[in-house]
Amino acid sequence: KAEWLEAYIHAHEVTFSDLNITSAWRGSGLQPFQPQTVIRAATLQPPTPATPQRPRTPTEHDIFEKVFINSSPPDFNTLQKANSILSIALNQGVLNTPTKKHIHKLADEAEKLNTRHILQQGETDNLRNIIQKRRAQNKGKRAVLKCQFHISTHELQSQVAEAEAATQKSKISTTPQVTTSTIDLFNDERVRRNNLTVIWMN
Image (tube, rainbow, N blue to C red):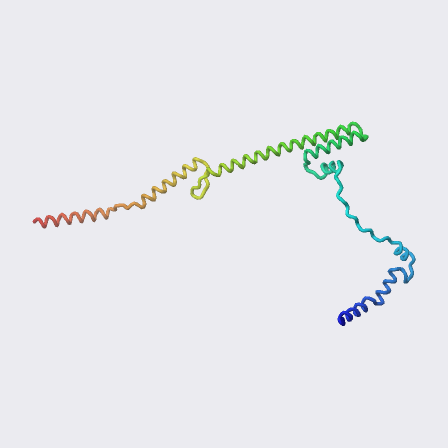
């Protein structure tokens, strides 16, 4: 309690200073006296709390605005509804005949373009699926030779021929060869044995 009382006294001295009291009287318009400030403060209405707004159901005009402003390209059903709303609004309003015809023509062209876009998108998806299937089929036909991928039959045959030639060379190099020095030694040994045989018989 002693600490709280000490803090309260210190806060009271800082808050209720002469400068703060004078500015409060001046702000209320009492010292110096300002009637307009006093009347304005007395008649000021308290701020009303903001009431949360419920989401309203979208109308036909909202659909029309969504299609032609926020959508690119719009859904076909939504576009058709918007065009029907546009036609109803044109028939009920007062417009020149050329303007009506031009607007109707624009609406029809928009539907045609949207239909064409849907068809082209379907064709693009089909072509993409075909390309992916062909890529998947070609993956199984590739052969790896010398750490490289080969698809061509000619290249495959040439690589096989080179591999077979290299194998034959390695076999020839590993086969022991009879040198001339070995043949000479063999002949000398044979002559020496013949001489020994002749001497023994004598």
